[in-house]
Image (cartoon, rainbow, N blue to C red; front, side, top):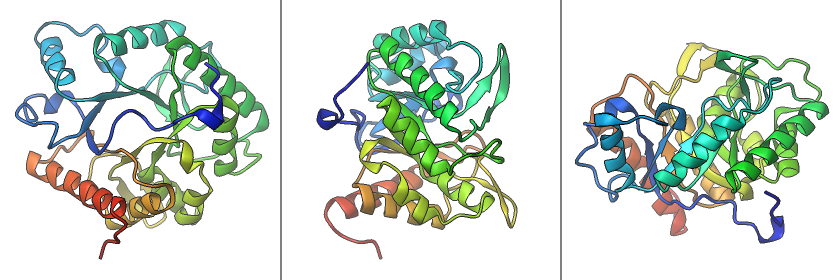
Length: 287
């Protein structure tokens, strides 16, 4: 799908503060309303062709809440052929559940078989051309623009340019959107020793579809691991505030994949997102 960038609206058709829906939350969130959680996100691979009791339960959510999809296994940077069968299944799944948007990681996780990890794409000119062409093909198949997430990574093989230069070049060449993960910026800034605020300012914020925020694990003073298994820490909240300041208030989703806390604690973190969105939307500053 080729879209005129001058006329493009890159923001996903959602708003407010969202939460990732995990199977362990299906009963916990049953009484929640769209006023509590403005939108939800799922990995389509976890729900495609799921029927029976679970399928009906999932349908009850997609009928009540706006949804977006965040893919796990398209493996956009893989040396293996693009998985068009998966894309067609995702397209059907999104249509069946009126899902509003699709995003993926700027990484790869397969080579004629799943590697069960998100691995870094080399920051090279050759990789830019290769990945951008695959994103364009994915957009053609889905019939809509998609967003690519800045990923956490722990090594940078064959690096010819900075992470920021690579992300900017891929997004521009593919004419796709950015899924801006604030926690990944913070994690990478510790692990690769750069200023997270300078990195944030270098991204194409006007192309942000929506935002992810999450917690991480402190392995060592100079090593953070992107786990989505702990509460969001204050430096990441501050980075989210800067994101709103630079790029405007964007839909923001809280990711929590394990060590799921009581619902009240999840709602407290969603309230933190809402508080910042309201403050920046009205031109105020948090104190």
